[in-house]
Length: 207
Ligand code: ADP
Ligand code: MG
Ligand code: MG
Image (tube, rainbow, N blue to C red):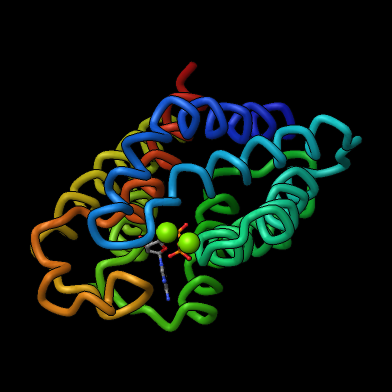
């Protein structure tokens, strides 16, 4: 990972979120307040603009700027949650390049911070349910000395599996939890955007 790749990743997330905006909102209309697509779109459009205006000295500068912009531009829960992920990743990547081990450590720091902030655990039907298996797959793949692209691909696949596994879960965190048993049978919007973020990383790294 280097500065150019980090920039390209953030841009690619914005493009993917733009394409999937209606789908994310549709998922959120079933078990939330129908704004996840617009929240993500607003946040990542602002992040791309903020990163474009930046002269980053490190990978972390790009990711930290992305995180602070998400916090300040998104009103919903996902703004501070994804904001904390990117800020924690940024803090962990204080150099112009990062090797796969350092990148995985940053991803782990991101997951820790969103768990601390949102107090969700696996099975609560949140973004954590895509993030946790994605991180585990990334760690396994990097540990097995796979290249960065293959590790990112494995993480994206695992995130999508985790995303699909949120459908039968009953939500215990966020707005969807207000629905109780009626949240069962719907895929979680935040797990879906997390899978999108990991898929976009794999596509960017392998481009
Ligand atoms: P809001 O619910 O405020 O409208 P969004 O619709 O943008 O915010 O995001 C909803 C998503 O945020 C959910 O689908 C879920 O994945 C995630 N989420 C909500 N609360 C939490 C939490 N406490 N921890 C982790 N993720 C959460
Ligand atoms: Mg919402
Ligand atoms: Mg909302």
